[in-house]
Length: 238
Image (tube, rainbow, N blue to C red):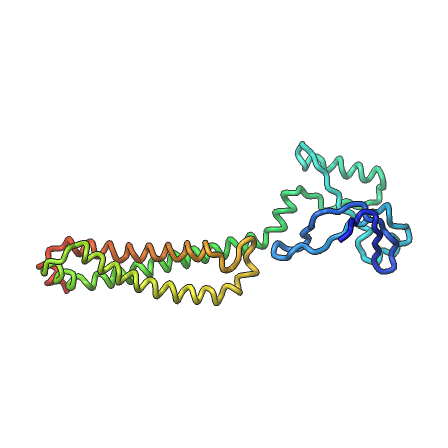
């Protein structure tokens, strides 16, 4: 609840250091790990004894960031030469552009996301084919019933509505069972997701809408085809 500037901090038996600024959060872990408290310790406020002892093991290395309007790769040689002009014995390693650093940081999650998305897409395609095939076959089996209804004077739209309603009701039951199962296994996917919750409403709504649309088409198309068949032919259909 106070202004941190000018206050003093120290870690263990280290020297006192004066707070000279406040910065934003820094994410040094994975994308799925929340940013932790982070402190920058100025070298100018650290005495030689502390640097020599290096109790935390991080005072003998330094990360240097350079900004340039030119090609970053062309700056590497100049940067190394400048460091060696200060101390020829200093080792300069891991020279990378920020794009390479970011790409390396997200390589694992990116591959997992691509793999998970591929399997999810394949599952959606298989589910679509399965739903369409089962419902289309079920409606085709009703050709005899449709012929009787048409022979008795039923309107095409009434027959279509009846058939589609049956298929849609079966779809609703299947979607409800599938949603329950999906919610049950979402906790296993939490570690593979970033920026989206395992129970993301849009994802569930989009998947449900897609499968429901397929079910309606699977019921409508065969039923519409059956209503165009001559009632006498439909009555003789096995």
